[in-house]
Image (cartoon, rainbow, N blue to C red; front, side):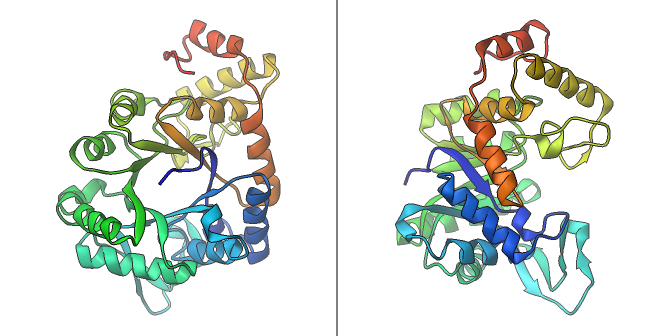
Length: 314
């Protein structure tokens, strides 16, 4: 299967990431993404303890199934639990009706996917990723990946891969398994190009698609200012200074730093899509507008000349 190229919709935010989003706002965000031509939608059980999957499935129900691509993830199995307050400790403003259990076993993969299909209201998904197997590599490679291979051969899923906030283990998946796609979050951005060292070249050689998430490094590249977050924590002073300098150069060239960040992520040939999270129709339209904004070559050259960028991409 092929991933629709360009922007993809990252549905963590409609699972109430950090702050609450209403059902209406979530539906409007997905509807706006559809109107802007976005046809790839990524979700996971982890996002809002299933809320993201339920909302995404409901919003896409009116559209022909063959016209869009959906990915979800396995590795965190949801188990019901008695009222335990909220889930903000895990980043989501939802009641803690379930707990997450790390489980990359074949049984866990199948049970997790079955529950996801029920929440999404679908009989199949196009892509399934092993989700954040950083501390569970042995089980993920020994049990989780073979389970995905079986599901692919059975036609339950179209493509398989892994989604992580690191590049090194994703490179191992590309080299040592028959994955179709990997999702790399936050490791190919204007501030962090670790995926360029091995992952992107290896994926290109082997014909594995790469989806980029975290284009703004969780906020710093969207709006660099004191208090901005970098990879979900307070931005270190040196990175904040670097982002502010990039923004000054972008301003001089008549573009936004957001436009440059999105264009940078989409440049490598191995990259099939760039995911953006948007909690409202307004944010969707802004991301789509920024993605469509031409970035002058002189901007990239000035970043290189000032030592803010040490790659020839884009």
